[in-house]
Image 1 (cartoon, rainbow, N blue to C red):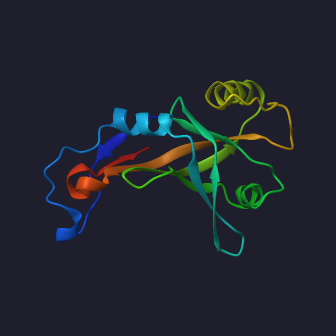
Image 2: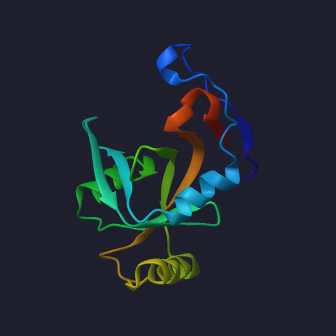
Length: 158
């Protein structure tokens, strides 16, 4: 899957900074995603209301891997609508990932379980239907640093 880089449109208002810094590099955005411990995951209920929840996740091979029970609000939302947005905790160095979540199985789920255990020290059974792994496949990633939003804002699309 190819990725194109660009700059998002940002209003020319003074509170966004002077725009003196370089845009966030993809490698830095990925490092932020790898290093985070907690991520906020946003899904949409069937009636259109949003739902957010903090989760543990792993950024690996260009995917955000996470687990959730199909019986949770998040799991039910994903079954209805796989569109999801996620971002690491915090607002100083921002990375927003928008895309679609896919339920993993087989070797993909086993790989996710291994990565999850390596990061968090907790092993989930990749064959447990009660706590399956999902992969958020990015369609758009946005990143910036709060110190200079205008100067550092970057956008990648797939």
